Length: 223
Image (cartoon, rainbow, N blue to C red; front, side):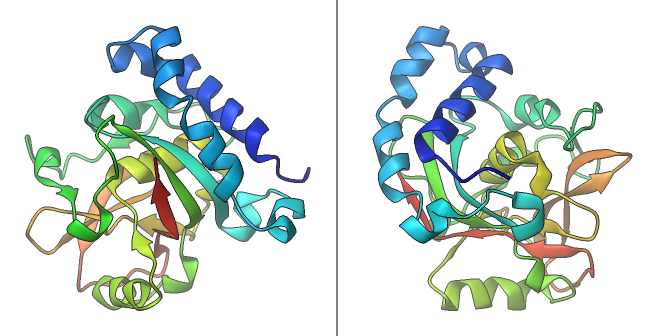
């Protein structure tokens, strides 16, 4: 794997979003979308990691970590439209939202106060992202408490979709992840795992552990 280049990675993520049609989803041309995200490039380069981390091989599947991802929130593109744009690394089947999300329920899964996206433009950067496989087999409530004690933040659904969009290699068998930064006021915790050879956005109970489901978190959000 090549060493990580934050500037090149930011440009690649913008190209990925363009290729998937995110400008049109957000009601913008590619030029307008480029103008929207351009201010984040300098932030990505400045905060993507320490020099030692920047020199390390970039391999999300092996490390379970990504230096940063460019996130487009539901304020610009609905989850129902963005989740099907994801796929497993090397896979062809589109991601999907599980039918156990009853009609209208996704709108109720909103960011917690601690995971509230910064800014108001509908785009932000998420830094030092971990899929959190150390929490596989741990009760989600306990995993979320441990993440908070470390001063880290749980990922929202949109951030989980962004992670899958930009780093699909991070989702592998028995190392999937919950997204505790989006809650609906009940005991359900959203999660992304592999089903029918594709990424699936579903949910699990906050008190029920799963051996194949960790807890994703991030070090910071910036605009």
